Amino acid sequence: MVGIVWYTQVIQYPLFHIVPPDRFVDFHSEYTQKAGWLIGPLMVLELGFGILKMKLLPPKLRRKWTNWIPLFLLSVIWLSTFLVQVPLHGVLVEKKTDEVIHLLIWSNWVRTILWSLKLVWLGKPNLIGQKD
Image 1 (cartoon, rainbow, N blue to C red):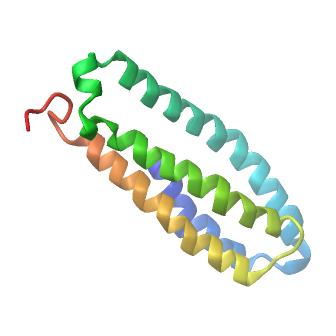
Image 2: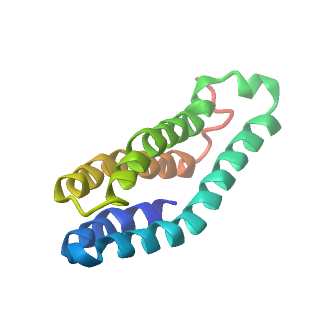
């Protein structure tokens, strides 16, 4: 997801600005449909694997708050997605609005940064079960 969100952030969303207004609605519709088929299932899988990982931990490690950080970050990502980005895309379904595209780009930094932090956190060795 980190690769997808960075691609979206620095390439795809900025390109929305150069699509002509008379072609934007069709372009955006095609984009959201195709992106949804890729991103939606990947987000669900990521959440499922995160929950499964926590369920497989011994109860003592499940109680350690630092082991919940990846799922916390993912929860904020999901909130941002469904409370901010999805409604902004809903506006763009109707017409091209540069202000909304700008808001989409800036608000998407939340997800870009959080997914990146999640990757860094999960890549750190010996986090799970680490003694305080």
